[in-house]
Image 1: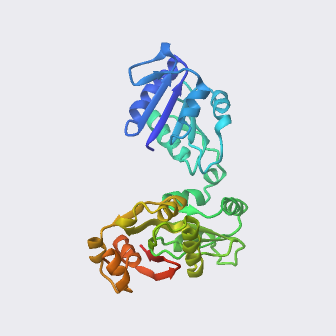
Image 2: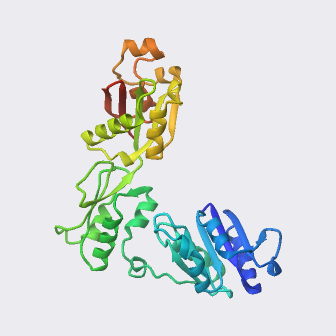
Image 3: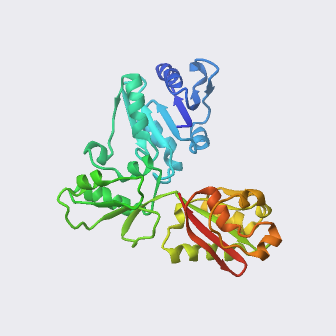
Length: 334
């Protein structure tokens, strides 16, 4: 974890605080305690607790050394959901127990509790049902494999089914993620299952939980001052027609003269992915069988922007140039 905040309230808690600051030294640590218990210049004086928690609730983890009640009351106003809340842990001031309170799986609180527990010789108190029952946890699997979860509701349904000893059908469309052994474990009798999980960049029925890799790349081109919503609708339409999940996009590429084009910048912002630009020489150096346009070549110095922009980002062009009303898009897969 990159950013971790540690908060203690007593002298004994300060001792644990100091040990944790050393144990977690590879992370960016911000430590707080009461002024009279400050152990060195690495720790800051604790002022208003709720304001301190609010300021650091965007960190990767917040660790309290003290009573669970203090932690619960201080984080309560800022809790949203397990997909965006930080890992929150509580350690008693004697360092006997490490308790993950929030974001045990997605936020990594359980994993951090186990790590701290081993370092402090403390007992991790894990309460998440899938962990204590030794059951497959779809959110941990997704995190470990850098996959997006398509539906929070369906993810909960998967966990509930497994805890009820029901089978789950899981398969992968992604060659690099082999789930053959996991499939046998989740459905040992190879029965028809009500709940299905697919690791895929493709669109499935909305009753199927899809775990989505970031493995698709877009190349785009457009006329100057193209309407942003028009570009967004165009690209979405192409993805739907091709049966591809637009949430699988990893980055967008185009020619450098489009670096300030609002329509493309807006597209990248909506997808929360990088917008990469390439010179005409870089684009011309891309290898492949491209649909070239003399008009485009005379205008920008390269005969095809979108397909070449894809092939600079990856080696597998899966959807060739598609054009509509002055906009072009091509798609590649990692």
